[in-house]
Length: 305
Ligand SMILES: [Zn+2]
Image (cartoon, rainbow, N blue to C red; front, side, top):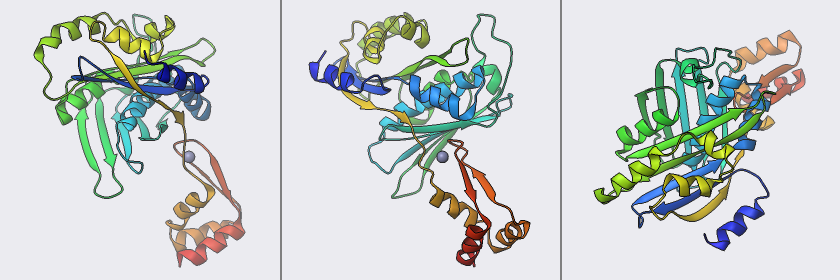
């Protein structure tokens, strides 16, 4: 392993990060990430129950890696799941700079564990759809929707890559919630076959992938993101190329929230003024609260007119 990458990881001082690399002479590209702090922050901000921590955490994990695939700073990747299960839906947005944020429609869901003792993410999401939206600052957003395969998220995102982008992909995402409801482990990987790959590498790849039990097992065994990819791509000469930091980050501000209020229009603002009490708005993504005093709403009314 290159000492430069080891050095970069050491400098991150235990914060979350994504590793990107290649294997099989560039025929495979691979990403792996540790998202412990990001998923913990999502839990802290949204007060998620364990199954929602796992569901949202897995989508944040995959979203962060897909964000890192974006080429330009202004681009955004949004993953939205809508399901008929008790969670209702999940929304995650990530950019290319390692900023990821997300929320669940219903953060407080309690359902029985699966027979294998794991949190029932698929059951909590139910039947539904995954929508992937790529926003580019210079044009129309690109959007693609497909039915959920299992609702376990890794499988669903793999299906997205196969169906929408025609890229054979393996996706793993895992979150282990501790008995105190805090996040004990969180991370994942995305492994893709690049166009023009030699089919001769498939048996080896299938064999190495088949040895993976789960992401949380690998994290519990102490594997780092590089270790996860070395394990998942055993015998295929994985080479880490790049490390980038990652964190839960929302770009909402008091000023941006003002703009939301202004879009209500003069009539609605006048009603709020007539009620003569402060208005509180909450950001869906990060749960930050913004309070507007009556005098400030009067000012916004002038701008709305
Ligand atoms: Zn926010």
